[in-house]
Structures are given as structure tokens and as C-alpha cells.
View 1 (spheres, chains in turn cyan, green):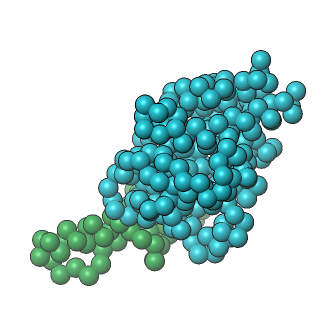
View 2 (cartoon, each protein chain N blue to C red; view 1 turned 180 degrees about the vertical axis):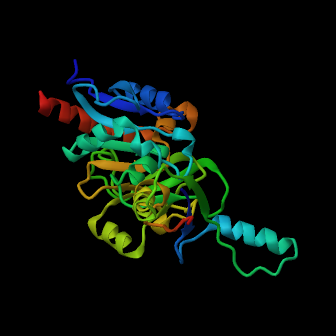
Length: 232
Length: 79
């Protein structure tokens, strides 16, 4: 059954609050979610992908994600990513991946200084990634954001590099937080790690206003399934 | 041994917190041109040698206290 339902590890930090939402979403989309406590030294066996959920890990003291990046499980995730494993960071998970150096750039307080909590329109820049394969390039998605520190920053040389490599997979149609180049989601250079501020796990059921998040998470489930099969 | 680390947003980096403080000060009638907000970390170290303490503090800044992409830091070791 594992090849049909790929196992996706969802890391639970103290202060994570979207871990169960992510688990429910992945389960609905055909994966087998496995909640993994931040104190674990290893990921469960046969994990096909890892997701870092939203929340306020370790109280987000100092800088968002700055302390979570030293959680014991992060060493295992760094090894997993270095081996080409698929890693997704949502909101606080994105902040943690940036602090950990698994993704370029960093996230800063919103330019407005206000917490932004609403559905936002996004544009898919890259549809040829393990995180967006169910989308088409140029597609418009509506997914909720809810963050106080989602202002993506990369300095000019780094930003040019990201643009040249096509690492900006998702952009805001109307910039809600002051992010440079309206970046909503960014890939690492290898394309196996992706972070985004919008919450796809809150957009998988029409009852909640949008099912566009299922395109993002479903893409990862597809890619994880392929990977699980390849590992058998 | 006591030490302080002053972490501040690098020049040119948007500092919305500083802007909010600046505008509040102006509203209070103060003639403020700019305000930038950083962070002061006070530490007590188990160290005898100020040079070694400084090396430790450098590593603390690189690893945790500052994000070199957006912040600069200044270390002061109390004599």
C-alpha cells in the first residue's frame, strides 16, 4: 500500500498549529501523513516527502524560524534534502527553511506591519516542479495567507540569481506584504525544496472557499508517490 | 564576563518597525528624521579571556543572534 499512499512526514514543532490541517489535507489527497516530533533524530523509514507546517515554532523568538532550525529533527531533514528528498515549507515552515539555509533569502515583518489574513490571488510561474505539476504556468490560484512576517527578502544579486534560475515558482498578483519581486513561493537551486507563505492546506475543500491548495499539495503527493515507487 | 551584542537592520534594508516608531514620535511632536529599530542582547559568559569570549560571541552571532543577510552586529565585551 505504501506505493499507493506515499508517506509524508509532517514535522511538529512546539508552537506548530497547522500540522493537523496539513495531515488532513495530505490524507484527503491520497498520502499517508506521519506526524514527526521535532525532537526526533531520524525521519520515519520510507518517508517520501517532508512538510514543515505553519505556526509559531518556539514562540518565533529572536526571528521567525531562527530557533526551530536547530531542532534535532532538522539535521535529518537537511540530510534528506541533500539526498534529493522533497521538502515543503508552509508559512512558518518556509521561514524555518530559510533560516536553516535550505532555501535562499529570508522573511521579514510585513511592510504594512499588520498581520495579513485573507485569500490572495497568486500566479504560478513554474508548473514543472514537484510542487506545482498539477498547475499550468500562468495559472491564477486563490489561497489564503495568514502571517505577520511574510515579506520575502533577497538582496539584488541573490534576486537576480533566483530570477535567472527560475526559482520563483509562485508570485502574488497583488503584493500583500512587501515581498521583493512579489515572491510568494521559492525553490532551492536543485528544485527539491520549496517554501511558500500562502496556506495550501487551508484550500483543499470548497467549504473553505477554494480548492486551489489541492493543486499544490496534490502535486507533492504525485511526486512523493513516484519517489516511493522508485525507492521500492 | 559580561558582553552585549547589538543587532541592527543593515543600511538600506526596509525597517517597518523603525518607520512606525518614527511616525509615532513625529505624532508626539518630536522632530525625528529617521528611526531604525534593532535588538540588544545582554549576555553573561563563563569565560576568562576576552579574546576567546569575542570569538565565541562572533560564532553566536553567525549561528543564531543575527541573520547576516539583513542584519549587522556589534559586539562589546565589558572590561
